[in-house]
Length: 248
Image (tube, rainbow, N blue to C red; front, side):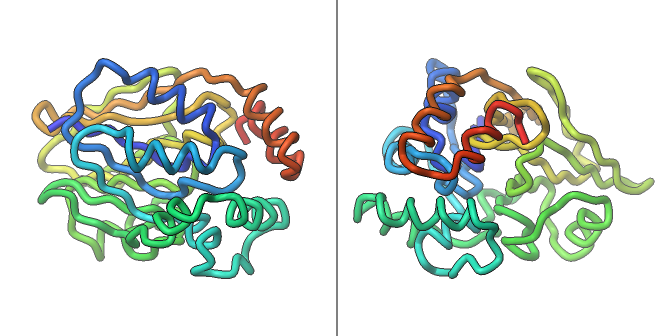
């Protein structure tokens, strides 16, 4: 099975469209979307429509924390001011069918196969950030799955559990390939499409081939200036535009 793994689009249609163009012509059996379709960016309707209608094979989607606030499932009390302002702006501008779609997104974790499970933050807590070896240890100790794809941190990264302990790495560069071994367990984060935070402004995504057991991270250039202009023109907080060029 060939998987396309996408996460944290955050209403950035320019970035998401660049990813979809980049993978056009490839064949995927399954598309996994790890949450936060909306929030921050000025193109939420285009992003949601593409998730609903333009992805490959079986499509499995879990919700993110921004999806919940935009859908008014949660009040966003823990959001900073720009994030909350963007969520409120998005709620008001999503078409009714798209708002309903976001509101009905399932919570993670979600088993996709015996091998692959997906979540937004952590399989133990959909809103938790997985940054450290201790975070990964808690997951590996309490959640049984060989391969877990997660998002939320906006940082391409990997955690590997084996007999000697846990390895962690931040994935850098235009592309990176990892061969998964059957006697190890994995927590894999594609990074963010719509708002990278690893000081690389390019949109990030992953693919995974369960036959060859090869995972691949990929970065793609997109029209950042256009996304920035659209944010500013829409009246969203300017800081949301500024950070796109910095990847923070």
